[in-house]
Amino acid sequence: MQDAVLAMLAKEPSHGYELHARLRRGLGPLGESMNRGQIYVTLARLERAGLVTSEREDGLPERPERKVYALTPAGQQRVTAWLAEVGWPKPDLAEFHLKLAAAAAGRLADPVELIAAQRRELLRRLREAQQAALAEPAESGPAGPGAGLLLEGVMLRLRADLRWLDACERAWSRADDEIEGG
Image (cartoon, rainbow, N blue to C red; front, side, top):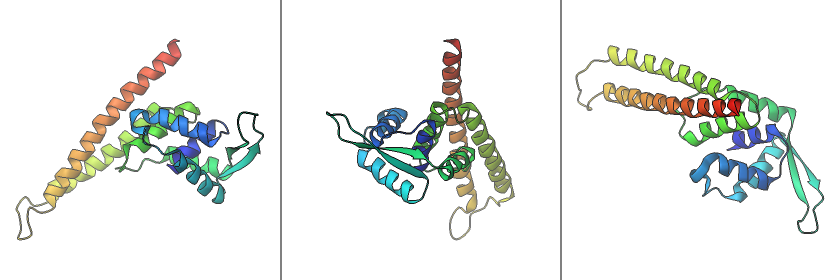
């Protein structure tokens, strides 16, 4: 969540309420349960870590004064590192989806290129798992089926993740085409 919040701030300084709304929009129906307080706790942690700064903005008569959060240079560096990260498997696909949304919204990176980098990493890991499976003896031992079953599960998960990345690429490519076309 911290990296997604930082990436959303890379586009422009924002209030916590605006960040919450953008994250919810980015997650669609999965964002409905996102607690607004979680954003403010995350922002406070990021500020203590020196990744964001905040300034009080005078309120309007109908609104109290609010804090506007902005990235520090260290925060910008962390966003850059997060966008370049290709670690997998991720326990939460929503984080990768938010990475794509934040990259596009802030014009920080091309989502299709981020997807391609993830695909290369997954294909590398799939090759490694396939090689390990070929080297693993097929017989079961006294403790059960052996590592072959685990390797099969790893390969199935990687193939599923690759199919999901294909769907992501199709969706983001269409979005790019719509932006360019009109």
